[in-house]
Length: 307
Image (cartoon, rainbow, N blue to C red):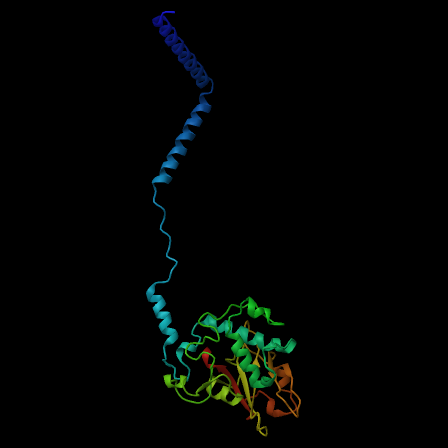
C-alpha cells in the first residue's frame, strides 16, 4: 500500500477514536451531571486543603527545658548556708513548699503507724524507743519511695503519697545524713565540720534543737506533730515523745490518736502503743495526761524543717 494512503488511514482512525470517546464522556456527564459536579467540587476542596497544609508553617511548641537562670537559682538555693529564721537549720534543708510539707507529714505518720502492724527490718533493734521511732520515721519520710524502697517494706498504712520534691535523704542539702541538731545556736557553715549535727539525737535534743514549741492545746496541732513529756526518775530516758497521728482532713481533736514506743523496761524491749488522746487523758499516772495544767506535759511541737 502507498505510504501516504496508509498514513491517511491511520490519522483518520485516531480522529475517529478521539471523537467516539468525547461523545461517550459528554453523554456520561449529561446523564450524571449532579454526581460529576459533586466530585469536581470535592476534588477542589481536597486540593485546596492539601496546598494550605503544605504552605502553612507548624505552630511553635513551648520550650520543655528549664532556662539556665532557673537551674542556677535552684542550685544556689540548695547550697546556700543562710539561716534567715535563725532556727539553727540552713534554709536549704527546710521544706518551704506547702505540698512538700504535706507529703512529708503523710509519709511520717504512715511509716510510724505501720510499725505497729508489721515492723520494718530497717528499724534497728537497738533504736527501739520513743525517740528511735521519731528518728526512723523522719529519715524514711524524706527518702525517695521508688519501687526498690517499696519492695523492702513489709507493710504500709498508706503508700499513695507523692515524694518530697525539694530533696531526698541521704542527699539532704549541706547536712547529708547528719540531719539532727545537737546544740543550740544559729546555723553557721562551721557546723558542717564539727559535731553540731549528727545522725542521731536523744528525745531531749530532738525537742530542744530540732522542733518548735506550739503550745499545750490542740488549737494549731497538725498530723505529724509531736508530744513531749518529762520523765523524771528515768536517767536513761528523761523525756518521752509521741507522734500525733491526727487526720489531715479535719482539725485536731481529743478523739485523734497518738503512737509511741514505750522504750525498754526491766530488760524487756518495750512495745508500740496507739491510743486516742481521750484515753491517754485517763491514764492512771497523771504525768502522762496531755493537759495544759500537767507540768510534766511539755506540749506539742513541730519539726523545724516544716516551719
